Every structure is written in C-alpha cells, then in structure tokens.
Length: 412
Image 1 (cartoon, rainbow, N blue to C red):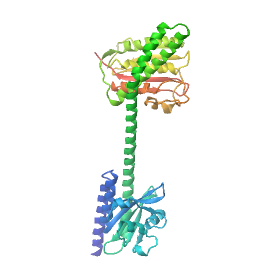
Image 2 (cartoon, rainbow, N blue to C red; image 1 turned 180 degrees about the vertical axis):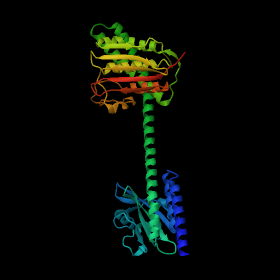
Image 3 (cartoon, rainbow, N blue to C red; image 1 turned 135 degrees about the vertical axis):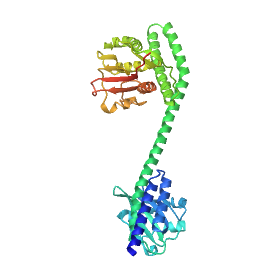
C-alpha cells in the first residue's frame, strides 16, 4: 500500500513539473517568468516562501530578482556577497545546500532579515545553471511541518534547471527589445537630422547658386575660374541635399510612386547618353548592350535615377581608361539591368553592407571618394518599391564590380 502511495505521489509530482515547464515556457516576459518560478517552488516544496537571486558579474555579488514573503522593492536594493552567505556558498560551490536551522549557521546573511523583517528558520538553496555555469540561486524558505528533504532538493533542482533556461531566454529577449528601441531612436534621430538639415540648407544654397551663376556670367579671368569652382561645389552640395531628402522620404514611407508603362531600352539609353560625355573624358571603353526586342516595365520615372547612380558609381571607382558596360537582358518574367566595371572591386564581406545608408567602405577620415554613402541605399529603396531586387557581385579588390537590378517585366 505504501509503495502504491509513493508511486501515486511521484506521478503527481512529475505532472506538476511538466505543468511548471509548460508555464515557464509560455511567456518571455521576465517579470511573469520570475513570478511563475516563485509559485512553482512554493507549490512543489510546500514551503512559506521562495526567492531568486541572480549573479551580477560587474561587482561579483548576488541580487534578488524576485521573492515571495517580502517586499520586492526593498529586496532589490540588497546585495548578497558570495563570501559569508548561504546563497553565495551554493553559487560558488555550484551544489544544493540544506540548512535546517539558519540561526546556528555562521553563513546566514542576517542583513536581509533585518531590512525586510521576514524571519527565516530553514532554507534550501539550489544553483541555477546554464551550460554548466551557475547564473543564480533559487531558495526555498521555511518548510511547512518539518525539514527539507533530499526529495525536495531533487524537485527544486529540476525547477531550477527549467527556470535558468526560461530566465535566460527572457533576459535575451528583453535585451534585444532594449537594443531595438535604442536603434529605433537612433534611426529617428538620423531621419530628423536629414529632414531638418536638407530643409534649412536649401534656401541659403539657392542663394549661393544664384549669385555664383551671376558671377560666372559677369566675371573674367581668374575671378571667372573662382566662380566656376564655387558653382561646382554648390552643385555638389545640392546633390547631397537631394540624397538626404530622398533617403528621408524612403525611410518614413512618404515616397509616392507614379507608375506607368516605361520602355526600358529608352530609359537606359537616356542614362547612357547623359553619362557618355563624362566617360569619354576619362577615356573609358563605355558600351551599351541591349536586345532588339522591345521590353517594358511598370515604373516611376525616378527609376532612371537608380541607373544613373550606378553608372556614376562605376565612373567614381574605375581608373582612367578602364571599361564600363551597361547591359539589358530579359526573361519572360523579368528584366535585368547590369552595370559592369573594371574598377577597384568590392571585398566579399562588404557586398551587402554597401547598400546600408551612410555606409562607406573607406574610413571617413582617409577616404578618397566623395559622398555621404546614401546613393546605393536610395537605389535599393526605389528598386524594392518597384517589387524588384538590387545586388552587387565582385571577385574582390582590384577585380571590378557588377551591379544588377532585377525588375518585373510588363506586357502593355
């Protein structure tokens, strides 16, 4: 009869532990996880209270993460040293410990009782481990009607193993959420800066361009050359402001497309003709390869800026007398536009990152090439708004690059 009763008790305990496991894994909110652990400890061990202490690596002490039977606000301000405390002994030796009468144990840390007013008679402490490393301690306090047993130790050890995983997962999620919030704030700060800067600089820049245009027409000799230099610098600044404005519109989702059927060969030809004079000045072998079959896409006219940006990049990063190829091919479903150059190439670990806004391959203090690092980010944003894809390929530094834009084909 006794054996049957023991078996029944064991089965009930296993069921409780399974329920506890399901409960602990039902949420990733740290506060809820801690509360569930406390309740599980009291229920399984039939004790007055439980507490959870977690290790802080910065000062090498244990801190109360949660506790029943005492005010949590007061406990949060109490640190428990590793030396001279029962919890510290459990943590350092990484083994369970039963103390039937804490008043006779010199390791009992009386500060907690003095500050909370909660009287502890007996205590069972069990380490919480992640990957064999102790991360904290679970304590069960004041066993109802007797002393803690080896069976209690085994039960609390199982709860501790489940709790360690649940707490670790909850803390990781909490840290990720905080990190994401910081990134969101940083991104918003960038967006606000771009919006304010582009707006505030536009008016004085317009005045500068107006005066330098007038000076170019009126000045002669050396003054004419100076006016031309100022004018070109102002145009470059205007391009940077346009990039900032476009990037901000993409970031905030305010970019509106005016879609219409576009003959892709005509669009590509316009870009090629615009860039040809610059390519000729640098003695490039500049080729345009297009199929004779008419190809169409459903797009906004601003998509032309993407191809212009890719060609300008190719010119910036390709030495004089290099080669650049602008090529269009198609399948029944897609149109592929490629810009190939014989320039400086791209390291393999940079192929994805070059499309991040403000990203520069070169260090900002030593780089030789101008720009804010927004051109490719804007290109990617516009292409993705057209349900397309843009990516880069390169065999490495010094071996050229190929930028590819894949867009859905349209049949008018």
